[in-house]
Amino acid sequence: MKKSNRRRFLEITALGGTLAACKTGGKVEEPAPSRLGKPVSAYGERAPFEKAARWTRTTRTPEQASSNTPHQDLNGIVTPSSLHYERHHAGVPRIDPAEHRLLIHGMVERPLIFTMDELHRLPSVSKIYFLECAGNTSSEWPEKTAPDVQQSHGLASCSEWTGVPLSLVLAECGVKPGASWILAEGADPCRMSRSVPLAKCLDDVLLAYGQNGEAIRPEQGYPLRLFVPGWEGNISVKWLRRIKVGDQPTYTRDETSKYTDLMPDGTARQFTFEMEAKSVITYPSGGQKLSGPGFCEVKGVAWSGRGRIERVECSTDGGKTWKDAQLQEPRLRIAFTRFRFPWNWDGSEALLVSRCTDETGYVQPSKEELIAVRGLHSNYHYNGTKVWKVAADGSVSNV
Ligand SMILES: Nc1nc2c(c(=O)[nH]1)N[C@H]1C(S)=C(S)[C@@H](COP(=O)(O)O)O[C@H]1N2
Ligand SMILES: [Mo]
Image (cartoon, rainbow, N blue to C red; front, side, top):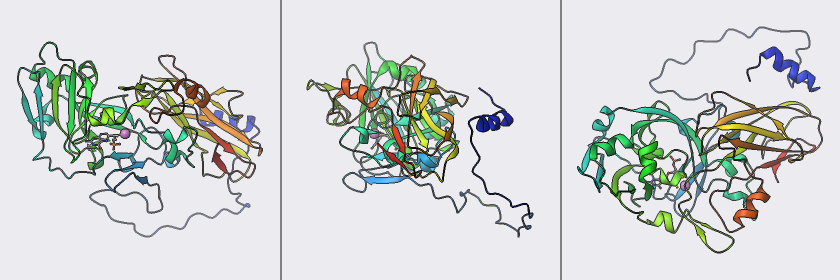
């Protein structure tokens, strides 16, 4: 999978491509020496020329809102914390970590209350995981369309999360025989809460306090969130303050009024936890414009809640023919995987689309295949392939 720069250059020329770059006209001047720069600073800032920003949408009130990651502007697999998507139902609470407590009670031998300090002393792990709202890409159900990848796929981001395995803390409390679910509750005014099967809690769920090397951002749940790898974002309860161990799901408002899907036969899917494999081309993507024909590296991200991404294929003719994309290593389980596909645009209309396969062998469905199974009344868990049209003038749009 590794390629030397020389090989990559040969690949471009083999494609008949040319590199879009300014000609020097023979005369090359060295850049002038610069003046003394800005002094050191306590907390870094990005270059003032960089403008990538979250796109925000207010659902009902300013607190009932979401904001989307600008995938079109990002590289690699880690989303900067300041650009991680946000979704909250009652605003971002301001929580002093010194005051914060986590209560664990219910079907346990020893109900315990943890301070943040006590949690920080416990054995910890760091893992790179994506997080995706179940509603991500719901704009692709037929009646609606998003103009760009930020609006269509921006409710998914990927961070390195640090925290204590929940299994360890539950072992401290001593889970009673017969227990099979937990209820996790947030400290925000709506007390957002979800039921999580105990088996998942004992597997890979984290009590996370770190994000990309520093403390979790307030928007992501500071000072403590539940992190449930690979499952719909809603279940990763932020500002976590209480876990109650029990022997059945609680059927909270968030898992009955929402986060269920109406199927074609009128029944509803509930507790659809896993996020299925999805991929999307982020460059070139909707709203962008190619300056002219020639070489263009197609780039994108793929992820699966069920494990590792094994394969990504790309098509430039709307899915009639496919070729394998290059996958950036390391390919981590339940994390973004960056893919790249060398393309020489000949200037005629093209339909760019990607399709991924995860380690379980599951292949991302086309929109038509997804609708055949799920119908048209669903809102959550859309993971169909995404086609972008490149018009002859280079402009890219959602089709
Ligand atoms: N306490 C609490 N936890 C919450 C929410 C919330 O509103 N309150 N929103 C949920 C939803 S719908 C999603 S998709 C994720 C979003 O996490 P993020 O804002 O860190 O991206 O958090 C979940 N956890
Ligand atoms: Mo969500």
